[in-house]
Amino acid sequence: MSTSAASLARLIASELSVLTDDSVKLAVLNGLVDPRPITLDWEYGTPGQQFEGWVVFDHEAQSDTLIVYCEHGFGPLSPWGLVFATRRQGSRSMGMDSGWFRSFMEAFWDSHAATLLAESGQAESR
Image (cartoon, rainbow, N blue to C red):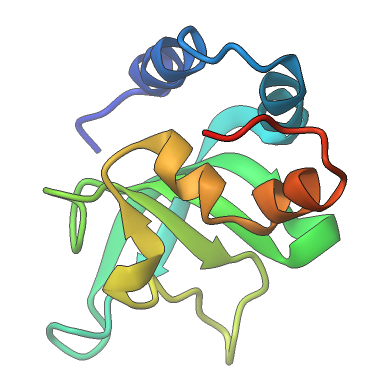
């Protein structure tokens, strides 16, 4: 992986620096984890093809989802993905392109964590 954990932390910090709503910042910070490696199955290429990425946000206990960063697959244009945390049939899929985004915050806003924030009435509109 050419992207380092430190560079991912800087990318996320840059996106968080423009947030003005403290409840949104808190919701993001509650799920952020130190970037850790993850292997994702790519169903659109050679059978068994996998790509390495990073888990950056863990919402497994609440919604069985993670936000990951991967430069491959959908990654060149949309490197931030929402994936299931639980392995399905022994593997973890990258899923479909609709679960991949150009920025971390786009992935967050499409996640269950943001849905819970909106349902609680804590977040200002984006």
